[in-house]
Amino acid sequence: MLNNIEIDEILITEKQIKEKIAELGKKITQDYQGKNLVFVGVLRGAVIFMADLARAVSIPMIFDFIAISSYGAATESSGVVRILKDLDETIEGKDVLIIEDIIDTGLTLDYLVRILKSRKPTSLKVCAFLNKNSRRKAKVKVDYLGFDIPNKFVVGYGLDYAGKFRNIPYVFTLNPEIYQGELK
Ligand code: 5GP
Image (cartoon, rainbow, N blue to C red; front, side, top):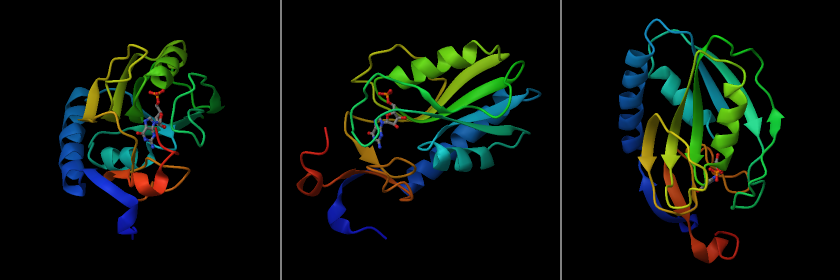
C-alpha cells in the first residue's frame, strides 16, 4: 500500500495499537457504566482511533464530532484555534469523552475543553491516542492515553501530512530525504 521509501521509522505497530485499544476500551466500559456517554471526536485525525475504540467499548454511547482548525498544511501549531464544524447535539447533562488523535502543544485541547465545559456536561474527560510531552504550552489533563511518543512529526492511523497517510494502519515518521524542509 505504501511506497517503502516514504517511511523513515515505524513507531507504533498495528499489533501494539490493537492491544492498546482493547485495554482502553475495557477501562472506559468500566468507568462509564450507567452513564450518558458521548464520544466527541475531533475531526479529522481522531476518526480512525474513535471508530476502533468505540467498538472496544461495550456500553451504550452516542457519537458526535467537532472540527477545529489546527495546522492546515503546516506541521507547527499556530496557537490560533477556531471551530470549523460544531457538535450536532447538546452535551448538557452528558458524560463527554473527547477523542483526540494527538496532543502536542496542548493549545487545541485546552481551547476545546474550555468551550465544551461552558456547555455544562455532567463530566468532561479526554482520551488521546498519542501524546508528545516535550512541546507542551498549555496544561491539559489526559484521562486516557494510548502512547507517549518523542517529539517527531508522525503520520498514519488517522494522522495526516497534507491530507495523506490517514488510512495507513500504523504510526510512522516520514523519510526526511523526501519530505526534507517541509517537516519540523
Ligand atoms: P496542539 O494544539 O496540541 O499543538 O496540536 C494538536 C493537533 O496538531 C493534533 O490534533 C493534530 O492535528 C496536529 N498534530 C500535532 N502533532 C502532530 C504530528 O506529529 N503529526 C500530525 N499528523 N499531526 C500533528
